[in-house]
Amino acid sequence: MPQASPPRPFLSLILGGARSGKSRTAEARITSLPPPWIYLATSEPRDDEMAARIAQHRDRRGEGWITREEPIDIVAVMDDAPPGVPMLIDCLTLWLTNVMLAEYDVSGECDRLITRLEANDRPVVIVSNEVGLGIVPDNALARAFRDQAGLINQRVAAVADEVIMVAAGLPLKLK
Amino acid sequence: MPQASPPRPFLSLILGGARSGKSRTAEARITSLPPPWIYLATSEPRDDEMAARIAQHRDRRGEGWITREEPIDIVAVMDDAPPGVPMLIDCLTLWLTNVMLAEYDVSGECDRLITRLEANDRPVVIVSNEVGLGIVPDNALARAFRDQAGLINQRVAAVADEVIMVAAGLPLKLK
Amino acid sequence: MPQASPPRPFLSLILGGARSGKSRTAEARITSLPPPWIYLATSEPRDDEMAARIAQHRDRRGEGWITREEPIDIVAVMDDAPPGVPMLIDCLTLWLTNVMLAEYDVSGECDRLITRLEANDRPVVIVSNEVGLGIVPDNALARAFRDQAGLINQRVAAVADEVIMVAAGLPLKLK
Image (spheres, rainbow over the protein chains, first blue to last red):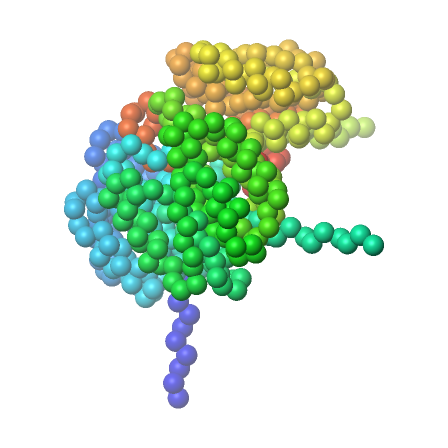
């Protein structure tokens, strides 16, 4: 007798602006599940400012976290990590920045990520920035980045079970 | 015996950032009504980047659409179009850009548009950008544009029957 | 017999972008209470553009308002003002700008403000800008400002009884 396939684990997208409290909101989502939790950091400490911010985020997280650092190939980290363990990906916008700076095929990498998320085998919470609500940037690279950031947010939102916008530390449920 | 005037047709404002999915949301609103539908494009293909985007939008729309292109005098297009046919105006922010670049009287043109919308005789969905949620721009022209964009959004929202903010492709009802 | 302490008066935070209608929304909140009302303006007319905007805001307010202008020490104004009189603080983002330009201790001033708000003895409505939803600014000062603006919004939101985001003149309740 064929068995029903188990439901796909929970996928949540946490959107917000700079210093909106989105990382904190995402951490609270993940830590409502039993530990351990995987923290997948996509940031690379390119300068002192960024290194300080990464250290600050790490200090805020406590026991129970396994940290993985990967600027680009987050699909490989998802493949390699012990199955079932909840994962927080922080953040999609920096991942996109890294993919674009390394001159990878943006569209191909986005397809690959979405395919992996559709076959998701663990609870995943993804943090991403909303960057499209200001004045049109002067330079073409910033405009291209803004477009890609908006597109990947739309695509992840489409496959997510939950989408939350965070402002001033407060959640607003979009899906 | 005096007759009651018929109810004014539906007016909807769809707000969102760059690549938020606002055009797609607006198209879905319009195409829930029977065809044909008028697509009033306010964009002018000033460079290759913009031409590519316009072509992409046009390809996504299918049968049933009548396209009108008018960068500035959208009131005239509303006056001339066959009555009752639903119209999608995409977008208000580019229209404002065109009005300002052509050095028309911004305040007068905004008054004219609002007056026309108040006497609206067809279902209309208007797409507009929210551009005021970033850092204050360096130059005075960008600040003036940002102010005017915010003001016209407020004025259209005040006369609209429905206002929807779109983020990551997901609608959030404001009115 | 010990008496129960009276409930702390209402504290509201009104967030929004440029020309989103946040000041108007905040004024409507305050004027729903009986007059007089204190308008605490944190803006300094540094140039003609800003002077024009301040004058425009003042003209819109009518009878019943007591105006206080203080770019930095808003805690002192709260201490000195007649107790119980409702106060509108417009706006937190300009206050932060002033504190940073004057090279005061930002963190200390923010702590002082939050402590004062926690011991709030009058209805207070605070207007603040959301500035973190655009592309990352090029220069480090703008990034630092954006971070501080996001943090103080989070902190005020945490102690507020009500937080409203305004877009196109329409309120969206976050708390």
